[in-house]
Length: 355
Image (cartoon, rainbow, N blue to C red; front, side, top):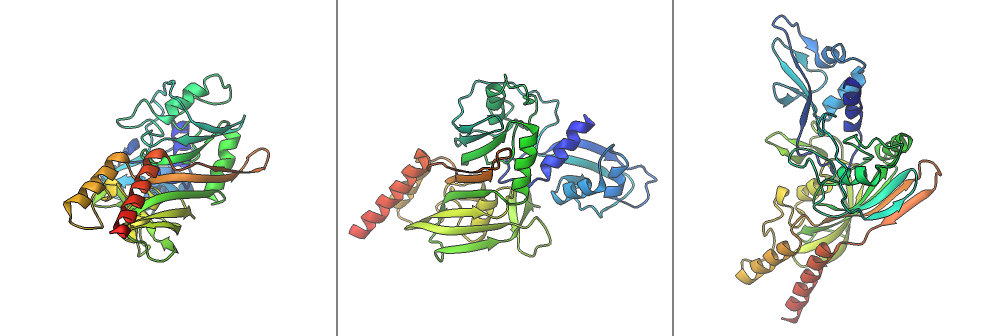
């Protein structure tokens, strides 16, 4: 169990995009003795968890995954008597059994090393609290059940990066340990090419821009991420955007990721005042722009009903094949639900121009 958990710590500190980590799971718990003298927490943990380095502990602390008495601490925190120290991660411990399930997968590309999947909105990526079945990992376990080099019992099965449950689009899956190591390094080193399309509230200023601001968990609500502009908290994050189309009270934008933080695009767009359309978690399911007319409000509600999730789609994905070294690039068209909302806004704008 120690070995598996240490693997999870490595996975935790990778530079993943928009992770499905709403729920945290306790992997370790220690209670300091009554006579415990002041001691840095990284040193405290390094002598209690076999085979872990202080550097890996520090990385876990930077990811807000080391808690003392329920609150995240940094690696220089001094442990005090009776402190309750826990290490939490965004995946359950390996006791969780992954059950192969015959769930259809939209496989864009597959070879002996990797897969590219076009994930529909609504599909959870990996098993977790409230979603122990019916996930992408369960589907992968079924698809790869006859593959002798893939550990289908691994709850992180093949995952190199992640996208949120209600975000649609391209997802890269590694089929071998070697491919996973190589592809994970490409994500960590920012060598991949990822573009997203989002429908955002408001008329975005300028035709292009750069959003920079550290992203971390909101201390008042651990289910939310937020920007810390002072740079004292969170992890550095940069998003580049380009306006694709202006549609009255909303704007269709293309977002290019320079980093990959949890909910990055959702949080960065909200930070500049342009929350993603129908993003319930960040308030985009309210009428944030427009008029007070009942007819307009009903129009927006109809749009929400057509696309009952955040209007965010992972459209392109580029990387270097881990074995052949070939540059690979994939594109996924905007799905029907999101496209239908864009068309409705186009119709709304056209009708206003006629008036």
